[in-house]
Length: 142
Image 1 (tube, helix red, strand yellow):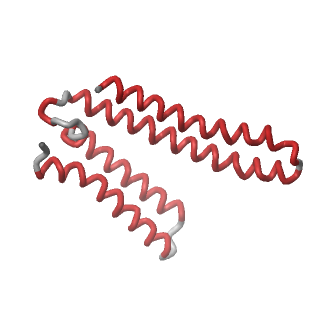
Image 2 (image 1 turned 90 degrees about the horizontal axis):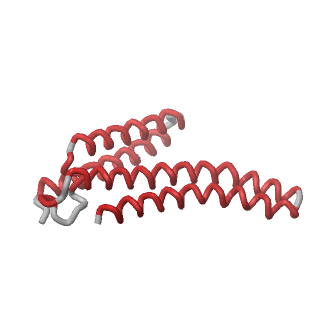
């Protein structure tokens, strides 16, 4: 069973990220540039990552029994989260660039739809591969 400190350590990174998103959107609405708000988000992500790496209880609290969890289990959960997160970011960037180009190519030549949709699907595949790797990591633990 998790005590109050463990629950606080689990909730702290989530609350910090939510607050940083709210602050960044408010700053953007007040006239700050997109570059500044993105850098602010990256800095807050780096801070939360550092907190999670410094406090091993945060990483190992995902297990059902914290006292029986090995420290390597927490690192495996972090590795699975990084694999999924980075592959989803990469897939989002790929689809964000390929989909408008596919729409433009299809509007010029409707026969190009089949070729264009393949490039969009390849970007989606990157995210699926990352999720598959994280499933393999988590299934190795349990």
